[in-house]
Length: 95
Length: 380
Image (cartoon, rainbow over all chains, first blue to last red; front, side, top):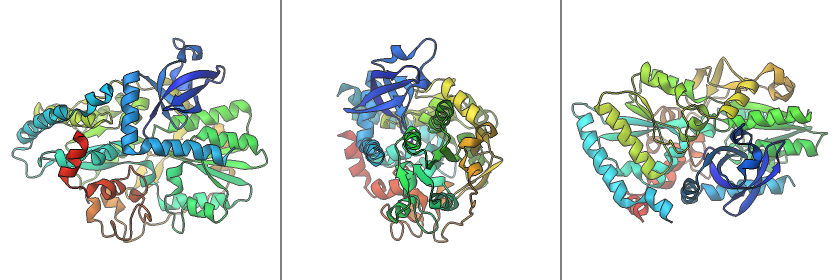
């Protein structure tokens, strides 16, 4: 819950509501990007950005190296698997 | 992977450990106890145990595990309050997976779910809002908890509900805030701390400034740290270096993620939706002044505490449970009377055994490895 999980923004699904599709190590999920957009970074410009995601919200931009490192760390801590499970369960329980 | 190697390089780790050892000897000389450094964040606790950092450090340094695991500090009464909410036939209770396993006085939310209560695990508060959209005839209550890392997501979900005019969504708000917690720890008489490893992701939201009182008033160093093993070693070295030079400052080792000012949009959403409570009850630490937040009156429609009558139960922890002493850093998990016997990660008695970020669960899973094993794991 407290460690952010890195993902890459692969599609802006709703620019008005600041929603985007991210790819987290192959798993795709819609997240809210309102915390990383401002006048300098409109939603459209976020495509391709690597972000750190907390419970469905992109909280900060990171670079690709940081993303790779963090994914590896989360994997080793067993938290990546837990996050994926949480995403899957959330979808399964609430179709 | 070359990126990973850079932060796991055993040669680098050895170099940092040598530097730490030399500095720790100088700084600790003349003291009758080891240097106490508290890691505030549960994520750091997890890394420290996973990579055996505790065992690698010289005897002059002792790491104290702080209260930075939100499910670990949740009092039993709040879980019972949730169970009472879930009993309303019109309520769908939603929350994070970790929160579902926290024991209440009789059962956890997970057990209540198995017995037929409509309790659903969600990954994000936005998933809870989606459930509300799909079930306009039901009231969807999100059991919100966590420090400033999860607080913005809850606030933004409320703002989204307002924008869409969704009226059957509310929060049972149990968010807590980090600064008063650190204050309470610094004010506790039985604890002697020499420095802090500052939380990485909370700081990403709140920035560096809120910690200034730790340096200015309490004259202690705090270094905001990343989660890689080498981040933690480097941050410990930075704390020692401050102690050696008799400095007490807020430094940021995790600059690749944490900006000095924090995240403006996230802070704005928090400010809009939440206000401080006069008091909030913590498991093990008791009542801490202005340490929790509630939904502002302007968003009363989204506040389960206003929509329902909440029993507000106060339940004392089981007598055998010593979570409080462990949380305050005055008792080591393995010295708790029930550790590993009646309290295990499978059947947690105390909250510190529930989450992988809890000190007891970490001790249980990794603490038993001998130092050689941990070192070997880190360097492969």
